[in-house]
Image 1 (spheres, rainbow, N blue to C red):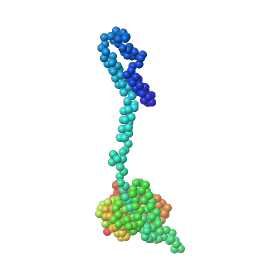
Image 2 (image 1 turned 180 degrees about the horizontal axis):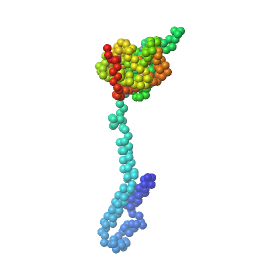
Image 3 (image 1 turned 45 degrees about the horizontal axis):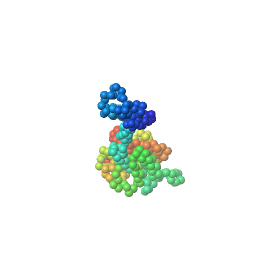
Image 4 (image 1 turned 180 degrees about the vertical axis):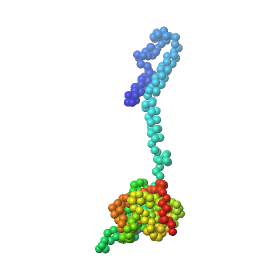
Length: 295
Ligand SMILES: [Zn+2]
């Protein structure tokens, strides 16, 4: 390519000098006609015929130069530049390339900023674990995971002032159940959605997504029997914007499920995240027929 680029410059100079033709080639034409005898072939030519030939020769030379020279330099570079502009996303001229606004998701760390929730104590009455701490750890991991996946996430306190009229594609409150040993069946998780929502179908979908994905991630079973009125009438349900789909999940019992909640928190968070993603991304989920919305 270099050689081709350099060649035309020399040829352009040759073209310029063609205006005063090189002596070796053009001496017979350059010399006044009356001073030299023209070759027989030229004797009968009218005077303009020689200059006509010069112009024709120059024209042919220029034409040759253009075909040899322009594709590699002038037009080609313009074409390449234009192609580059077309193929490179232009922020102003290509609205399709504009990033979509982030979807907002709210995560309530149950009891945070208010109280401890359930309190686990050892035999000496010393606090070993609080529900609020477990909730906050899970909620923080859920938030981080969703943020890493491009969502705008609000980590909210139990009675966060932002809950009033809160608008998001989903709001999930994370809680856990008692530290006390109840019985051997007091294990597993619960999900309940708002009874105040304007879109009961979508609320049930969020519940189904959370249930299915949480069960898959943790292996914990759904513990429908202990869903309380406190869950169904969760205070945040009536504070938020009625268009916001919301659910509360109790991710386990702090007694029998404590090991899962404190040592495999990543799985717990993953279950919640996958449930939210299932809802937000409209993934297929089997209807659970859960009694969470029933009176
Ligand atoms: Zn709680």
